[in-house]
Length: 301
Image (cartoon, rainbow, N blue to C red; front, top):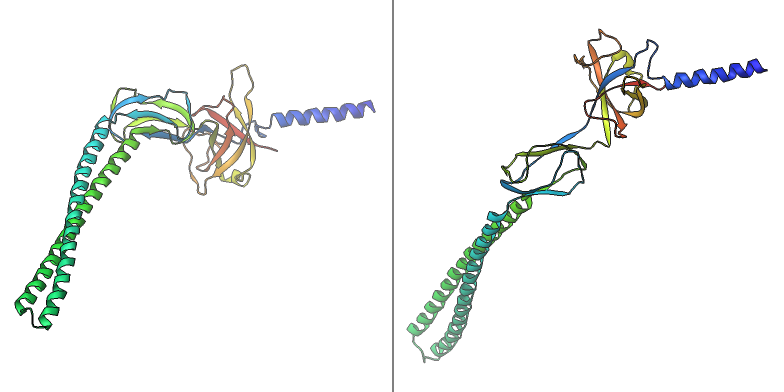
């Protein structure tokens, strides 16, 4: 009985050792090798001018939508004041012309009343044909004056709307003068400092979300059937020389649908394989993973 218990315990111990060392295949090699990478985003300036405020520091974590800088907006603010003054002057002219139209409309109403009286007198023989023609001519003239005034009002309204759009344009430029961080991430590289003059499209800083990284590896066609998207795998990274490689959990997040030639910097299980498939394994970062760090994977047996 004791021998059987010892054998059973020995078997469990051996199984545990096999599980903990599952990063190696039968030949003592990992299934695939590669390097960690992340989606890196370069944030550029949307305005031109001097950076009067700029907060990013390499290594800092920024939230999505966080305002991290500002390009000088003094000229834009003065431009808005100028355009608003022009718009006020145009609107003042508009009120004057509208008042003029009201006077003309009253004149037209009076002329039409006079016409009715003259026609009545003309029918009774108390007014001449000339008086009738004169009042009809006066009415036609006033109607033309009203049409011209309405056209003038339309032109002034169009001018005021154009100035309003200029104000909106300048306000949009002011909005774009604020440097807004687009996504959550860690600042990797800072390209400018506060006080420098930047132009539209100038790179300000680079960031990436380091909460999880992807280990990009290459597998051969023979290995392809052994991996599927969503499959859990074991990921190993090197530590100090006197320590065993660190074991992490990973998940296959992407497999290339087409083969490519083996990159020179990538090792594979078969040294002479010409065509390989790229594969990415997502790994949660506990702080030890860095972009470009080498890693290796092995299927869970």
